[in-house]
Image 1 (tube, helix red, strand yellow):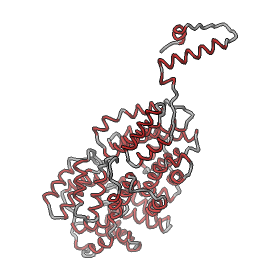
Image 2 (tube, helix red, strand yellow; image 1 turned 45 degrees about the vertical axis):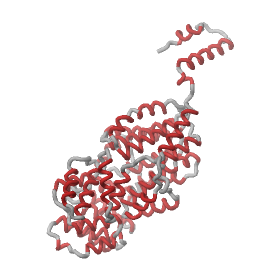
Image 3 (cartoon, helix red, strand yellow; image 1 turned 90 degrees about the horizontal axis):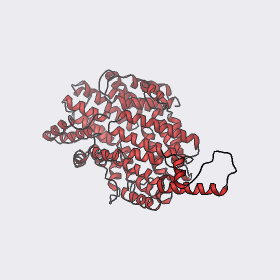
Image 4 (cartoon, helix red, strand yellow; image 1 turned 180 degrees about the horizontal axis):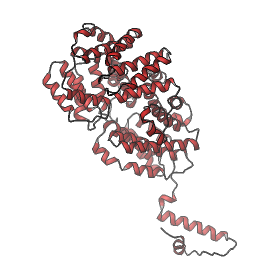
Length: 522
């Protein structure tokens, strides 16, 4: 470390330890010479870094949030050249890496980019601590890398990353309570933490990450709809979080579609919104809408190449029974370098050929399920289990499932009405028949008929490994919650949680827990 006496010696300064009247001239000369020294030997210290979310940075952020990475990168490079002390361009570059790594999961790209996390955190710490962006940028970078680390199976590191991010967001909120982006991120995290199953709450309590769905959703919605100048900058991001949380945490798809229409989210030019709407459509029995959204989007150059797009299109087209569904599923399995969704995609590819009577191709892709991808998601886990089981599903039940998942309920019902439960020898097929009928009646608004079929499914399947009984209980909970019968709704959600050892246990438990939290005002 350079000592002050060394600096004094270099510039011919003398230190007098005796009390004396300060000579203003000597003082000014000292300050000048010290400043000159710092400027020559420590230029980074001499120049104050800033967080300037100026119009060009806002344009870059808007482009990146649309996945127009070519435009966004060009704007950031221009800003760095003209204003080298502005830290915001480096913060926004993290968004580009986040979207690329989160969606595409390429391990080679991850290996090249992962060191940038520490570099960017160090850079963000160079800015003024009295700015709301000082802690916010660091917390947001941590949050984004937590999501990336989950995709690369670094779970423990991801947990600690989220904890650090949450603490920094909370600290920043205490210092700058009117800074809307804090509420966006804290609200989203609180809503998710609120769905942690009871058996794992001790972990979140130790880590200091307590959740509250209602309060979390309120904060995210406030950020998404605020006209505050800073909130307007982050509106696209807040809208993205709000839509996903509204569907998967609060189970209110009608509110999601109303929000999308009210705010006229641009799914033609905003690729991120197109992917979001297609994903929500896939999970909300609206295959036709999802296909149209992805087909109508602006696919000109400059957008980030997202392999997940082919997965979505393949799944949606298979639900609609399109002849070219295999083309998109194949593109995903051929070009995706990650591990999430891969087993499920291979399973759907095998289903496509099974339903078309091509058993050689069907068996080929089923065999690949055993060696490719991972089992981090329940769907991937189920695909592996089915592949190991070696049994092919009943063709009528499978086709009815796909049609129902796509929202083609009348076609699915007509198909099931050609059969009855007694036609099936296997108990799992009888259960699925009852459950599929219940889901179709449910989606068609025939609640009483749906409840009757769900009750049959629960009674016969609650101690079996198939997920049908647990999902039937969850769906009954939704019906009773909609009817404002809180007692029966809670009973149904609890029944779902109490069932052990079935398929899709994690995701169904999370939804049931969210239901109980909503009923209890959490």
